Image 1: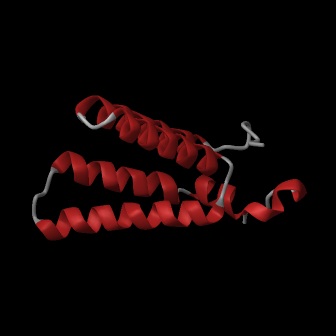
Image 2: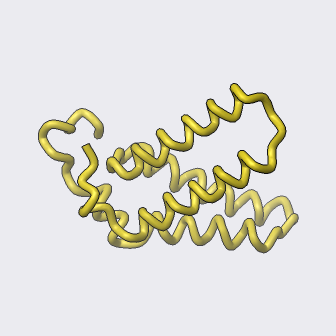
Length: 114
């Protein structure tokens, strides 16, 4: 179970940005219904387990944010909105409150999530 009061504001903001991006992707794409449902389930699970403080998922999310920023820089497309979005996500994930949230020991009942 998620301890909703322990979740830092920075992680709430990051998850809100993930949710907003997911909605934009759902509205802009013209794929099959099955693909849209699968993508929605993936994003909701990702957000849920980030809020649940699954450490390896946080590390993976940080790695994806770093990769996104590096790819924007290397490809030279310099989509300003994309660069700002990637850097903002990285900052939110690496703020001290977020790092502490993922560094704390999980409750005894959920010790297997780490």
